[in-house]
Image (cartoon, rainbow, N blue to C red; front, top):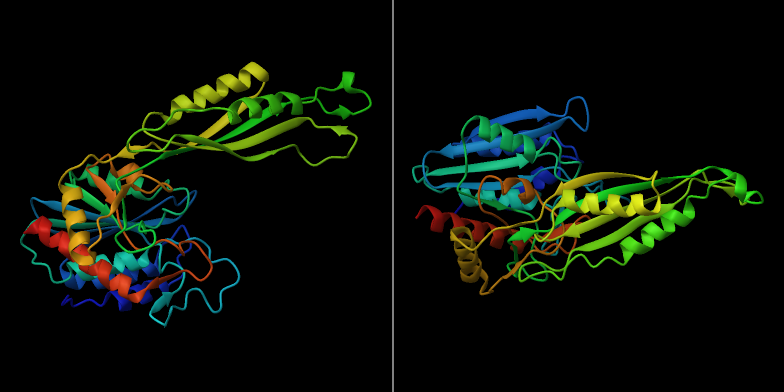
Length: 376
């Protein structure tokens, strides 16, 4: 690899800028400063000024015509938490490990892609970077806004690679070719508060809620398919407002999440839950937030070039997986085929988040091989 950009240097400069979600400002300055000398036209715009923001987004474009290869990622990070040996935004390199919040998820992958594209000829098609500051948060003003920006200008990539840390034990062992959908729901069952010694003067909501929880907990939504595991419902909270030991509560509630495959649709699952709630508690309510639908990228050119590049660099035949959490691929699939591939994710979101320096350099070489195969 003979790049004019050192991915380790760029990664450390990005990590050194605190960018807890939603991100804006200086961290985007660092990336723009790296991209403009490489011939990229950089567009930055803000969303969510009034709520869940401000969120900054960046679209960088270079070249023209076919093929158009897009790279997507995010510069926002989760809060560092307590227990770090030093400042989580002062990156360190020791024993071949780069440590700092964002080293794994996913500033190093962005740096690797910039380094990979640095010396690629400019006259072989179009390259874009689609970088948001709102992936770890509500994701209301991030990639969704980028897609709207592209659509208004008639810009559409032919394929998109997302640099999320998808590898498991070893760089190259896993590529995400789709993701499960996710929906959160909040159930509330009303009652009438009263004294436990006078239950006839109250209406205890706990019994109906318990029956709702029991029925939903027993659900077997499907058996999965060749590409996805079975859909799964998990309760994440069940309770009543704090009260005295002799107080019948006036309401009871529960929160649940369903991770679902492409045999299900989010809105249909919400209606099924509502039906259960109404059967056991006619006055009950269900609020829902669908984070994204399940998606699957069918085999094609993007699979072929990425798998080939990984095999040539690492000797590994990657597992093509749909497991794990969601990614912004749930939005970008509206545009074109999408896959996720990046570093091993063992320390993602953890205290002491880190990445092997050699993995970052190898990831840069894989990304460069992908680009060479796409652009010839």
